[in-house]
Image (cartoon, rainbow, N blue to C red; front, top):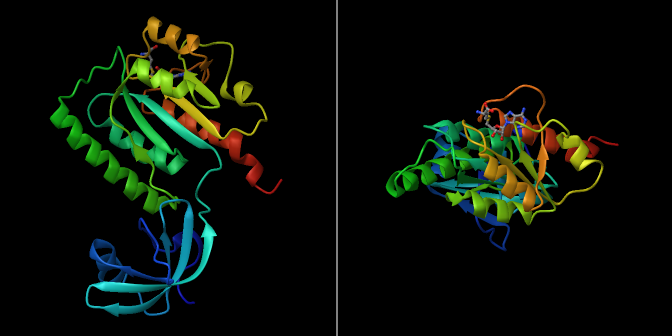
Length: 255
Ligand code: SAH
């Protein structure tokens, strides 16, 4: 096979892979392969089944607006973290969530779920929210393609803080990012254990109301600090995800 290698290889997501080892790509992705990348027969591309498997393919035939790809081998998607991390994000103002979704996908979040916090300034109408959901899902998809993820992280619909706490507490470990915490950081909570499902909860611009802190702790979430500086609500989830995934993944660097 010829063409680019490694993470620079073009990458496309599909939902189901045919049994016969031949994958027809049509629509926008085909346009991208044929007209934008101008790929040649025999060149390599990765087709991801959105469930954590990469199909390393060679381009076999181009027929009008269809690119037919032949599966050469199947590998687990290298870009998927071993730990499933759900980010619960207090709905921020304006378009900040666009940035948070994009960066959370790059950093390895498995799903991103916005919740209405007591101090969320933004209270969008349901129409506006539905537009936002489709925008966030497109951003997640584009980011997953760009950064080499093996699945497209889901972006959930807005839930209440109570619901978010209940869902988060169902994970193996649930981190509650608390700007008033002084005792513990993420490393102290994660230690050296293998975590399969981790929840990370971050507040909006105004932070958490005292009753929200109380409810999270009562539900068994671990209140943690990111250090002595107050980070903005778009910085905090990225710092928390970076730290949490570093702590759970660093063993994959050949120990
Ligand atoms: N307005 C609040 C800060 C909110 S920052 C205040 O002035 O106190 C937005 C969110 O980011 C917080 O709710 C928290 O979840 C997270 N965050 C920011 N800095 C943090 C820190 N040093 N430790 C833990 N969480 C932090």
